[in-house]
Amino acid sequence: PGSPSVRMLCRDASKPGRAATVDGGALWTAVSTPQLARAMAGSAEAGAGLRRREGPRADAAAAKLLSEEVSLLLAPFLGGEHLRPLSATATLWSDASAADSLHHPHECVSLPAWRLAIAGEFVKEAASPLEAAALSGLAAGEAVAAAL
Image 1 (tube, one colour):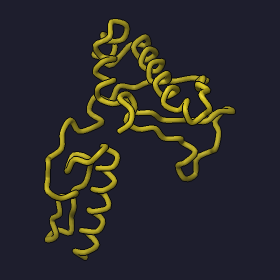
Image 2: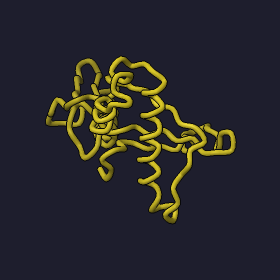
Image 3: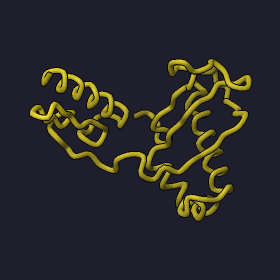
């Protein structure tokens, strides 16, 4: 929540074992919201390439748009300064996120007899898919630990 365009933003240096900078700059990963992805797929400039999952023009247009959205999102935290990426790439992952949840009453599906739990953002809705995945994973860990 908080951005109609960016679903997740992660600075790669925050991941264990990653370098603080790459080629003199910070490396970021941004994942768009499904709404922005649909808008990009429908745009005249990039739509045909995105629908076919090909085309350097489509990738460049998507990377430019998402870079601009991230810059706008971060500007208030950078004293109003807008980021200027050294480079940007985009990839269409049409099946990367669940379109809807199972609306399960619990954060994970637990099968204690098999010491198994199924977790993911698709199990139960939360404020964001990232929160749903985290809560589901925690609940799955607890369910499996309890079954041991």
